[in-house]
Length: 378
Ligand SMILES: *Cc1c(COP(=O)(O)O)cnc(C)c1O
Image (cartoon, rainbow, N blue to C red; front, side):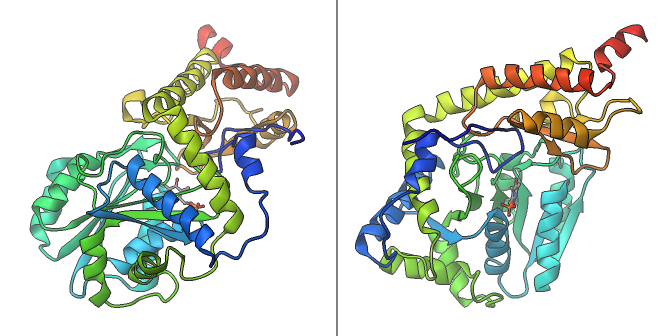
């Protein structure tokens, strides 16, 4: 194994991987239709269920080759029976993407539209569900990755179930980090992909969902050929294979990432992401910067930092300075201008201390204000 240059990715995925995960991709060529490869994928499926605390008799993990958005697409296009509507809780760019998917398929849907800084209340949601008994599926984004907002998935799931709807949760940016219990959290379907919380390479996406609901969906309108949940599920159940060519090398990397997940452990991993996040937040504070949301609103994985009030502030130049020194910061996607720092990936607090040193140096070198100093003077 020769050394690979280490980059600290503070963008919210793909995340920093360990070298052992990177090297796990280098394997002898194999035809993915071989039993040996099916065994690797079946183990991945079983491990994903364990992460979600999903009983294997009731839930299945369905794997696809694609990025995280494919999982959103599959759930929305596959799980809606005729004459039913989807309700999308929309408070950020990722739930907007879910609305766009509904539009693209011509799916009947309603949108509970909220500002990007607001989670839904039980009252607003219940009003919607009561007024529209044809809602068959409620779709929530666990963490809106642009703002870092945490949505109350347990409350949403409980209400969805009370009104006879499925609860579908986009856990792409929380899975394998923020502990998730599908039964306790009233989740029928959730999804994520290899390159985020699992700290693997990109290209493998997965849906964890109720077997009975997947089987029922066999008779629903088939809105996509390739991205159909039942087709992929039934093929995988029968053969242990994806219907079409899998991302072979990413599958091996993900098998390794899962071994590392269980070696680190659910609680220890979440504790690590939390201390990384606190290190990010204390740097934000000590520089006199501010976040779009209050700490209580955040999932504790992505900080959307408001641009400082400095006419000389130039995100791209700061990015380039940090990037050249091994730290990747990420542009914002919120109505108010922000940039993002994520506590994902195989990083720890020492990386964040090193990052803040470089960030401060960037401001000084590029002649930008250290906002803390300005705030003190006010
Ligand atoms: C990253 C992410 C996705 C998927 O994005 P891709 O670029 O398709 O991988 C979906 N939802 C959320 C909340 C995400 O953070």
